Length: 104
Image 1 (cartoon, rainbow, N blue to C red):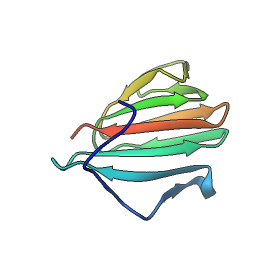
Image 2 (cartoon, rainbow, N blue to C red):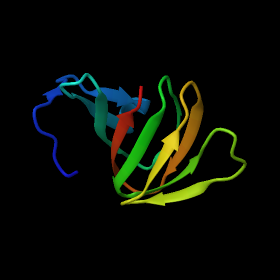
Image 3 (tube, rainbow, N blue to C red):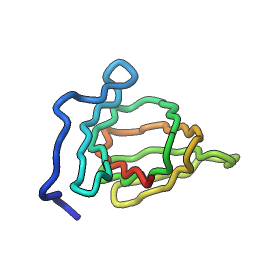
Image 4 (cartoon, rainbow, N blue to C red):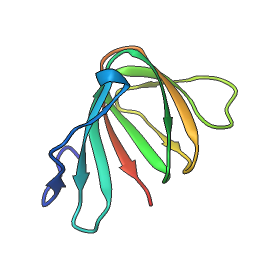
């Protein structure tokens, strides 16, 4: 899906890691949410509340998911899932455009 229709966009940006990660929240008519954003190269650890699907639209990163011993390379066009109430780490290798879908 390359565009969203009939949505509300929250005007204020979500800014993390001194601007290394910036996103905007999109709310759908049924109440579900996604964030659309960009990540600068760097290493970032995030915590989740609800389960998420992170779609990488462009760019490249390595991700270490909960319970995993190693890193997994993700490039534009790929995605990964993160369990709720967990932490994961990303090593962003190039400017990365993403869409994060919250599943609960």
